[in-house]
Length: 247
Length: 257
Image (cartoon, rainbow over all chains, first blue to last red; front, top):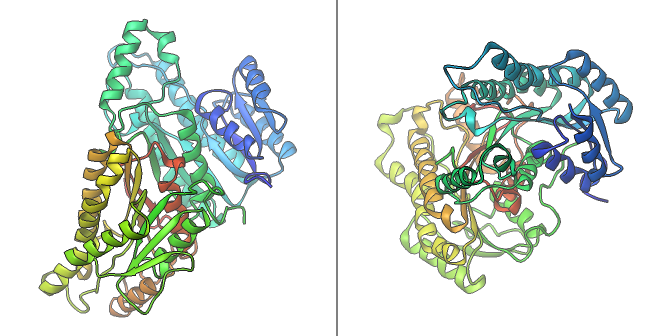
């Protein structure tokens, strides 16, 4: 029997990046996984990669009707949940002087409101002793140019991990957060010139105590530890970042 | 229960070599057992000769509050293991200054507490971490306490020593990170161990309103295996992108940043 073969898992934003890595790690370990995402094409590709134990649900976490539909689908597919990864989120740069109300609202709608209502809607399905893991960011812990709105939203999600713990600990449900540091996902090469991307990456490596980027697998193993093995930990944020926000 | 009782993946640490201080009972013994289950070669050390390590581990009696004691442990490491990949600094504790506060803690209790909770780790790391740095890998875990921030005058020496340990842990993490050696701290809350129960009972009888007998938010006391689960994670490759962290294993009782 594989380690997660009797486990039911939901990963929002599970069709790409960190969410996909978490879904893959647990599906490979035998878990039954429901992933969510907004793009059908991306979901289809993830579903193809992840195999039979994975169900893909198309929906937007900022839409409460989508979340109601997700809860219905999860109940039908899994019944109950052992681990919930509240991972769906977007990153948009918000230069201080030019950021619009629309961008501000979009960031908070998906990253904060989405996280709150994902947990509210799925909480009734969580088993006693289940683990909930919220994805935050190193941005929430430090001040950086052009990221104020995203960072504030992630700091709000870090706070939710504490309050949700108080709400759910009577059911022995542990809520924690994971704060991923720099990961080389290839996105930089798509959003800036090759030289700029190289320079940006070299700076990130030089800044990092471990002198390298992290990998998606390293985020997935830490998130999975929080969900299943951190049996006496609640309300914490674990920095998985090579020490960059810790040292 | 939906939680996994033992955090170790089968054989994920097979062939590694570990030293666990305070490894004869309580949290240390649980760490030793889980390391053994994961295929690690373990040397445990403790002060007392009346306790033995869990079966399967090598054991050396030593008083690591002294330079001579830490040197004896380092020698035993070389003789039995040939070096270490994993260092778990678990030995610790202090006597409360019963009926008194921070100002009347005896000087010898201050010294003793700093030696056991801080300087023992400093000395052992100075002897054993260079080998990790040379090999370009290794994991060190400092067992601190979750109960660091709410001030407890009668435990001022203990809280100061553990605060020192956490600060030192971060400095060592920064120094060793470029070499692939990871250093993290872990804070247990109230944990059902012989040492912990005794301290709490004494503390509760002296301080009726201390909350020392209340229930943590998770609804139960911690178990040694809860702490060991987290130690096994921190020393394994599952935590290969973590260094310089502090991790609470306290049932949600003591908020930190």
